[in-house]
Amino acid sequence: MALALLLPGYQYSADRPLLHYAGGVFEKHGWAARAVRWPTLLPHRHDDLAGWNRELAAYVHLHVGRVLDGETDPRIALIGKSMGAYAASLAADRSLPAVWLTPVLRDTGLPADLRRATAPFLLLGSTGDPSWDPELARDLGRPFHEAEVADHSLEIAGDPVRSVDILREMTVAMDEFVSGL
Image (tube, rainbow, N blue to C red; front, side):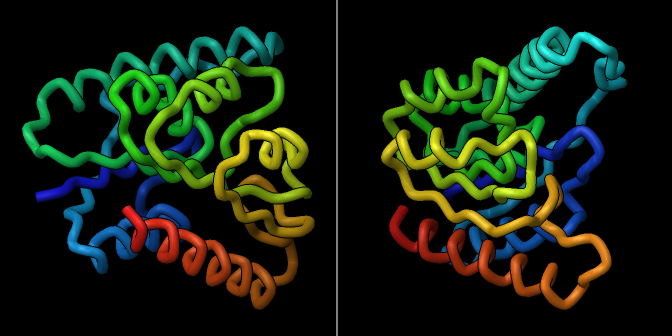
């Protein structure tokens, strides 16, 4: 069996569209998909953004590490939305394939974790998201899909039709990636 773990963001649950459809894509390709729920209160946001991001990364590493330590499936993939993408350090350490949805690529240690990854991963982001770094995404030399002007949820405020189009584009990109795992 193969297991895909859905890792939520700070304010983006596994029930929201990006993670919901990511789970569906993995299931379509024979994986079981399971949402991880954060077991305790998340670190409170504060003015030191770099410090807060380090706290979130440590939180994700601790909790996802515990989940992974308890898993027996021989094949595990991670799908992380924003904060959930801080699990890239674990993916790199354990050679796990991954899909990273709107990872925080600016002013964090996440790019270093992505650079040392040996398993395949896919990045999904948007030029309208201040945490996305298009140049870095290209420089990593890995597959990525980039929307234009969408926000951190990969949506366009006031334009639900275009937002659904972006969701479809991202889901197609995930489907193509997972079909190759």
